[in-house]
Image 1 (cartoon, helix red, strand yellow):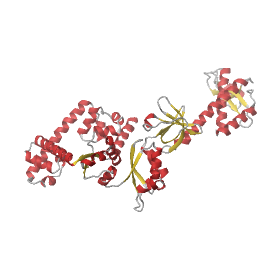
Image 2 (cartoon, helix red, strand yellow; image 1 turned 45 degrees about the vertical axis):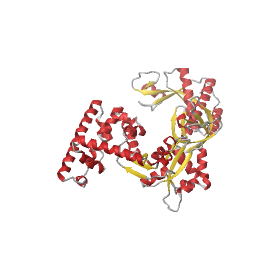
Image 3 (cartoon, rainbow, N blue to C red; image 1 turned 180 degrees about the vertical axis):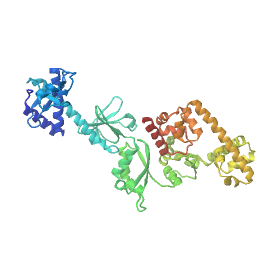
Image 4 (cartoon, one colour; image 1 turned 90 degrees about the vertical axis):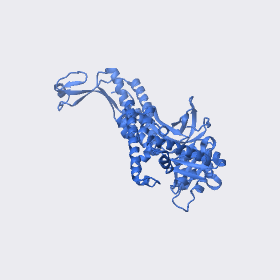
Length: 499
């Protein structure tokens, strides 16, 4: 037996388990492991030594474990069946024989080991409890107190009960500063369990922070009477929030603004004075864009679904208001609506359309080998590329004045041949660049778009998974894919890469 006060052991374990909300059995198990380690140091690591603490009286026993085998190869951990039967009448191959070790005095060593084990197990249990407390709170808004500001400007926030979180520098609102003991609200982006404990990552710039703050401030949003449909932010500067109420009797904008602007002002103050525009959401693209660009006055809107773009025509006096300082108003409106918004005056629109028309005419004349008047007619009727002509319906082409059936068939066939030849050249380039066929299959885009990605260095599924949505959009600006489609594509690539 080990010479330690058994009653004291149980009292210590009972006290710590109750105070720290830790399983008493897990503490005793950890202490057994510590005493086992001390026993091995005493008798030698070649022995299989175990310790047991009686759960009722706290008595601790050390013993050596021997496996019953037919042929003994290791005399430190094995025993023959013949010798085992002398110790235990019903012993058989595969059993374990427990040999009590001679009474030794491990008092100071074992007590010190037990103390260290309790300290270590308490720390582990607290880390586990913190992780359990916070892993389900991802996506919430938490309040805490600034504990310290790191050298790299990361902010460490104390959340209570010993839990800490971090707001990385890139998740902080520009121009905002915090001092020790300042209170701060932030959005929980992620919770990870690491050897050092749970890592809780907070953000002050995440779009969802403003959504959650509206939920807290506006009861109608919390009760799902009003829905926040979209958010676009320049954190700390300006935000646009699109809201909608299915009940026509509810005023979603008025509810969010609050009496004399009290509700939106409260959220703005929480975000370091970030100016917030409340926008009425609608399925009508043109109206949604108009709402998003308010207070600008729009003369005309032209929607190009193929390019996922909207041309907004305004008067010269409204141009700067529509675009906003450093393009902020138009940029946020574009993010909010999910459409590429191009703001221009009527004069600029005429010049641009003239330029596009001239380019299309030259393209048709050279690519289809047609006269200028035919190329002009194609351009006038909305055709801007040879691909459009190749994929168009013959009936649509025959509606053009002067286009007889034979001419339509000839033009369409020339367009098809042009596209085939162009794509064959692109495919050859893709092969020379070493683009994997698997990537081509996953992208399912026009070859010219895949070539743009390949020239940027995207040649494999793994490469695609490393892109961001904004990078993809900048490389393939004319794709008809939505942001959600692009994000799903990139996520799928990452999953395939992991597998």
